[in-house]
Length: 314
Length: 272
Figure 1 (spheres, rainbow over the protein chains, first blue to last red):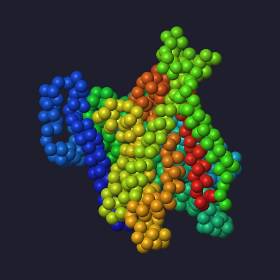
Figure 2: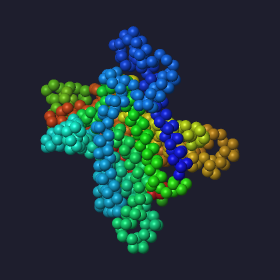
Figure 3: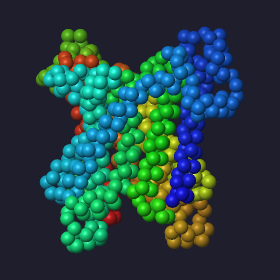
């Protein structure tokens, strides 16, 4: 087990290193001269030269990368050109929107998809199964941002129950914050829920066909115990894999849903930074989100050890 | 026993919807009810009517014509993005699976890293450096597909490179290029075709999402995502404006997903 974990940790660190190289290459190397990107076509050559000097763009590229990486590792992602505050602080200030949105969506996904997938598998090739599959096919086909617009149309424009967007903040209490994130979380989680329903159904079906399940039933073990003890635990390995990948996708999807519902999260920060040509912010946000996704994938790898004893005793 | 494709409900339904999509795209090249770019100040934000079956947008442009023309954008971005992801992914997969060793290790770390960049994140990064546009959409979505194609190809090569027919071909003097192109790659194609089919609807969803954010297709070109972006400001005045482009995306993705599922069933020897 130790060898497995050590291998995964080494791969995780190497992957983070490659992520940092990719972000750096796109922002600092591909455009040729990042100073010209920042000041735009209307900027003078003198202004570009001053900016190049201020941002240290005159130095060799490897030196620039080394300095940027060593600062990033310590949490220093540079200073926003638009707001003149550290990028790290800007990112932290937006997390109270993006993280709860992602987690609420993941929670909705788990509490809906697991029972529905389990139900569909238990009702294999019966009406309940077909119904669950049709619903999940529709869920996969509907883009999250369109679902968001339809929810606004129904609950805000027609029924007037909620505002069409904006974030109430957490300072006025838990409920106003949860309320402003509820519709975005549903819209964000729709696609991933549908995918997880299918994954759960297929994984549970595979396990239900195993000999040990038949043996347990033959021994007179109750159906609930067969499902909870014998089936779900073994079916969880592929389900956790899919759910882990889904969590990463939710984080990325939040960027779009924040735009639909005008939520001041990481996605809106990055989109605003593109308009303002604030390269340090774009660089910082993409590095942060990509690293988080890699971290989630790493956590899923480690979770295998808990769920699958075969890896533990390898 | 091989299954007959047309007797497979999922495949048939998926193929029918996909055929409708392709027919609409082809038709829109030669005919649309009205010019999709023609504006009319007096006919703005109208609901569905005999003159405009899907209604009109904020410039009085015919939504049916724009939805029809948007089909081409979706198909083009889908095909190019999946092609790009498949080409790069398969090359990485071949290098990893066939050569092995530290090259495999290095490429797999690259693939793990790319997995940290969903299309939206790559698009954000590219749009900050280059001007947002349809090319950025295609590249960003294509990159997001690289890991899946690379892993599938690598797995196929790892499994096949030590099989008897490959060893025999090598013993008979076949060189690496021939072994890869004639003996191993053709045997890994079935899962790659299924992957391409299932990636296509994901690409269409991603294109719509990027266009919605303003990072992809730019006005005045019709794109379903872009139409939804514009429709959001007029939800209370003309709700249909948001319904039809979104419905077009959902129907297209549904058809392609069904086609992909059906194809997987038909090509998978375990279910055939």
